[in-house]
Image 1 (spheres, helix red, strand yellow):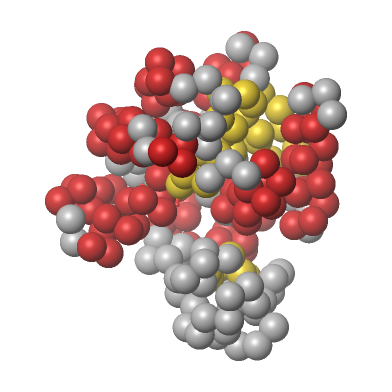
Image 2 (cartoon, rainbow, N blue to C red; image 1 turned 45 degrees about the vertical axis):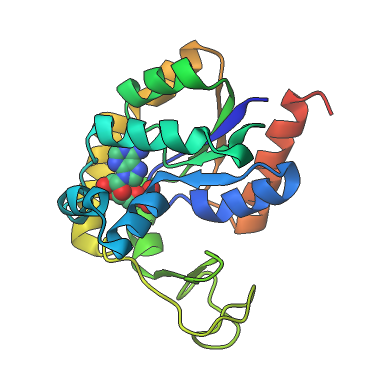
Length: 215
Ligand code: AMP
């Protein structure tokens, strides 16, 4: 089976929508950002190599990311395809992906730049189950406790600050957005309006998917 790519700027809601699509399709989520943060947390050499790029809002070099994805896609749970979140981010990554995996569709969550900063700056998540929350738009019901798994103690990403977000957005426009055309030319690009509440965006994404699958 083929994989699905979740595409969009930082803070578009890729991680949040991944949970909805995972529940529907059963595909495991593969987030290169999460993998890099885990490597960083473990103090591995990969984490150390990636750290300065991540802190500056720049892309980690293609060779590192492509190696990471190649290994991940060889794991057993990836045999029926995966839900890619945050990969590919460059044309070189998309070309490498094409060599190793069929892509069913690229689902793009479109959110204007001016909404990104407010979304990212209030963002936090559960370190245990990965559920994503926001101070204003989607707070936990009980402070610092996850609604999904009851874990106590939420965390904020080091790169979710205004300065780094500006740089991450620039990186997105210059290096990642060109993939929209690249995938459109291959008939694989489907965009939905991501500037709506979580449920509406999720419904639109699932609708695109079921129409595509002829369900
Ligand atoms: P994310 O969690 O997807 O926002 O990724 C956080 C950071 O990890 C990015 O700002 C990049 O520095 C790095 N990163 C994640 N995925 C990739 C990728 N596919 N290519 C290059 N760098 C990446």
